[in-house]
Length: 371
Image (cartoon, rainbow, N blue to C red):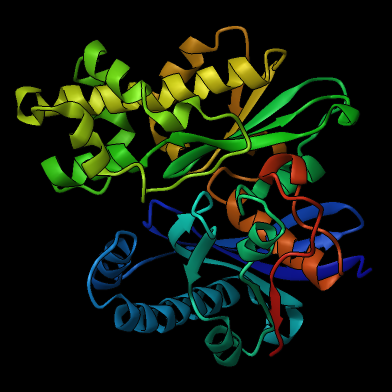
């Protein structure tokens, strides 16, 4: 096994705000982030990706073009990162590219997941070997294909003296339960929406891609009757393992449960959506990690001051912090995880946790596209 190697991780989540790229060094069981850059999606491409996330017309042609355009933006993020860090392409062992998810159907008759960002083009343009298409092998092994980051959390954020929960606040929220005793097994799953509904509602009502610091939600009042209708959705009643995405939790889903959406003040709906995220997260922690003493948060949602404050108030007996205290800023964790998953694949090591995804056995994830 290569004890010291440099990898790049690329991640764009369900929020579709942009690409996080990290350059990581793995050295005898340690991980060091050498650099990070953020590359926003061009607005036209972002609009296309959002359309592709829902059923529509002419999807195959649109998909084919988007697959290449996403790879081009990924390569731009890679070169931006290399310039920033001073590394050369030949110094990078491989790129771990998550791709951009446009459809995730783990519960279909024939389960599937689909990410765009053609690794062939990415390898050709950067001159760096690419590891990609991580999720489909887990699905082929009867898993959900998600979440995959818990294996990384277990490798680098576990502590034998306490039960920890790692909370990723992306478009969708997911948790990883890390018992102090590894023999008890690791649990991880998507709890439901984190930012995706709030972001979509903010864009519709305020033409803003997100609610800065959660200030708009803080100005509203939670509508308890609406909150209860939202909490009654089937997904929240399903046992783990489970995974989801914006193909379920979108504004159509909200309107179906809102009846007369115009009868509510927009800021009250935002407050209720924030409460939905907090309630589903805290219920999941209470059910699956009742002995949790530390909640370690990552993802873009950690920048939502109001959400984080409300989460801390609901979990008064738990230390709530972000991953900065553990050496990696919260906006870099997911990209670092996919750099590590690429490392696992190149070294011929398993990347999934069957206790998390529900797969029938551990598998080596993804395909390798040689430079």
